[in-house]
Image 1 (cartoon, helix red, strand yellow):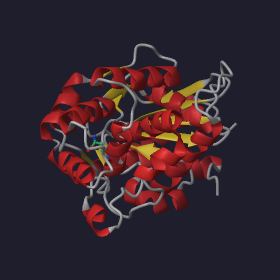
Image 2 (cartoon, rainbow, N blue to C red):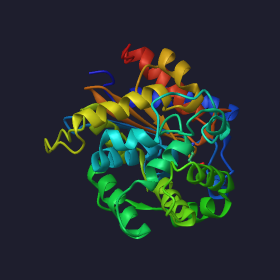
Image 3 (tube, rainbow, N blue to C red):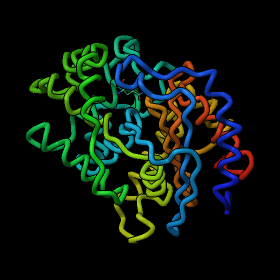
Length: 311
Ligand SMILES: NC(=O)CC[C@H](N)C(=O)O
């Protein structure tokens, strides 16, 4: 068993908290700018139901880019790999998450992977349903199943704040629609509504750790034994988490930490230690690449102390 007590975790959190002062809370989505720079919390969820935690784990965070792994799993389950990978690739980019540059320089115009914004917007546009409400509800029910928490909702304030300011994401959508990676009959305002609600799904670190646990256990909910995500799809998602989960810092993260993980600009990180446990972290101060600066430090300490690298 890697980490035995919450006290061990608390010591690591206090050590990692020092670097929050070198980071900055994201404010390009104005509502995210309200977060406290020195916040840091972590939860670890084991398959036998035990949880360890440190920091204020009641605090809720919006998923932001972490939601991209979940929508990918849902759309792969709905549409199958052939259809999905006709619209989005499997390669890391080396560019920031919201970059538009490769869409113009690559032929054909297909987002390189589903975890950058361009690819995630294509994936979200493939969520099944007739209305934004119906499509969002399907995603939310899936998240509630993964977290085993039917109270999970989205934060309207954060969703609205992003919807009102998301010009770059709109630009990506129109570019992709022009090149038929987003279907011609798609209303981009409705897609933005769905995407910003998806990114604003809100939960605490424990919930996040539980999602990580399901991915870690190859899509099985270890408590009920139910296969929530087919093993092959959980494998694909984890592979993307390794190659693209930390944006253009994924290579360094794989070398230094070696845990499949996905970060979001709210400062969340979801980790899935294969076969062992799930991790949920909240630390809103970000580094220059948009990853939680103390969250990465904390994962580095955990990985070194408990030999968690999968490589
Ligand atoms: N890196 C992120 O977490 C990005 C998600 C955010 N909602 C955006 O599209 O800009």
